[in-house]
Amino acid sequence: MKRKIAVGSVLLILALYLSACGFQEAKTLLLPKSDKIEKMELSLHYKDVMVNKIAINSSPVEFVESLIRDARPTRRKSVNEQPTNVDRHISIQLFHSEDLNNPVVIHLYANNGDYYLEQPYQGIWKVSEKLYQDITDRFRE
Image 1 (cartoon, rainbow, N blue to C red):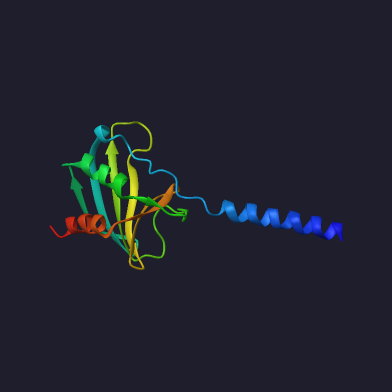
Image 2 (image 1 turned 135 degrees about the horizontal axis):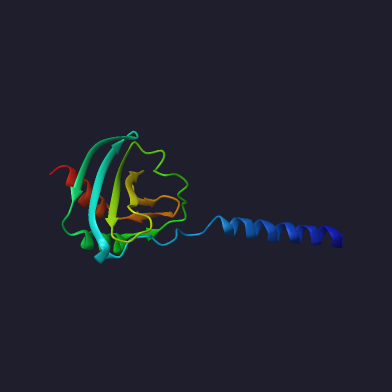
């Protein structure tokens, strides 16, 4: 009887430990320092094909600050170079003067009425509809 209780306790502890490992929040967005950003490019992708690309040379600092301010971590992991299971996404490339990880790439997309930023292998963050619309509206100009 004592053996069954001990085995049951070990299995319960192991199950709790393994389930807790799967519920980690996304890491911090890895973004270059605002004053180091030289330019930004947005590219619209539909079913993995780039259909439009625009360069933005003005106000990248405010843009990056709005991303940081608006992004809320989720418990979802990014395991691919670009989002999967969405037909349309926007890739945001931040070119900067720092040596590492140039350009920084972040993807923006809508899924089931929610809006997300995904940084490959770093994490997925939920963002507001307003931020999503502000960025998608740039393709209508």
